[in-house]
Length: 290
Ligand SMILES: Cc1cc2nc3c(=O)[nH]c(=O)nc-3n(C[C@H](O)[C@H](O)[C@H](O)COP(=O)(O)OP(=O)(O)OC[C@H]3O[C@@H](n4cnc5c(N)ncnc54)[C@H](O)[C@@H]3O)c2cc1C
Figure: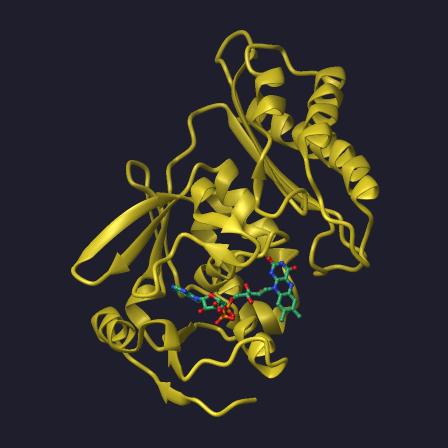
C-alpha cells in the first residue's frame, strides 16, 4: 500500500477544514471496510487519509414520531441491527442489517460509509429509498439535503463534492397502513446480494387499495434503482399475487443488470421477478397488520 499521511479529527469542523486544505488528494475513511480493500489493491492511493471514525457526535440513533428516525453517518451496521427503537419502528432496517456481511464487518462498517461507497449491490440504499430517506451533507459553511434516491450517480460515484461529508440519514415515520420489507438473493448468509428488493406499500384505510408503493432494487442497474413503472402498476389497485407478478415482470423488463461471475444479466432479470413478488407479498402482509 502506498504511504499516506493520516489524520484522525474529532469534529466535523476539523474534518471539513482538512478536506478544504487537501481536496481531491484526501480520502475520508470511516469503518475502512471498503476503502482499505481498494487501497490494498492499489486502486486508490490517497496522499492523505482522514479517519473520521472518532467523531462520536456522528454516532447516534434518534427517533421521534414527528421527526422520524435520524441516524448519524458513523453509526455501525451492528448498532442499527441491534437498536430497540429500530426493531420497533423500522424493523426492515434491522432485518436488512442482519443479512449484511459478517458480524465483524458490521461492527466496523458504518451506514454512512456504505452509502458513500456507492456500490450498486449495497443493501442499505434500496431500503432507504423504499423508506423515502434523505441525507444531510455538510460542506464548508453550509449543509444541504439530498434524496437518497438521487444520491448514487453511477458505480462507486455519489453526489458528494470533494469538500463535503455525509453526516446524517433522515427517515420519515411511515404513514399508517404501510408495510416495508427487504430480501436479497445470496449464496451464503451475509453475502453481497446478487439482486435485492426493498418494497414499501401503503394501503388506503377501509378498502385496502394500494395508495402508494415504492420498489427499489439492488444489482439491477449501475445504481440502486427505483422501478417506478412497476410501482404504478400497483397504485390504485387491490394488490394480489397476479398483480405482483405483473409488477415483477415490468421491473425485470426495465432493469439493466450487469453480467458477472455471480450471475448473468438474464439470470438477474429472472430473479428480479421472483424477488419483487416475494418481497411485495411480505410488504403487503405488513401493511395489513398496521
Ligand atoms: C467481507 C465484506 C462483506 C460485505 N458485505 C456487504 C453486504 O452484504 N452488503 C452491503 O451492503 N455491504 C457489504 N459490505 C460493505 C461494508 O459492510 C460497509 O458498509 C462498507 O464497506 C462501507 O462502510 P465503512 O464505514 O467501512 O466505509 P469506508 O470503507 O471507510 O468508506 C467507504 C467510502 O465511503 C467514503 N466515506 C465513508 N464515510 C463517509 C462520510 N461520512 N462522508 C463522506 N464520505 C464517506 C470513503 O471515503 C470511501 O470512499 C461488505 C464489506 C466486506 C469487507
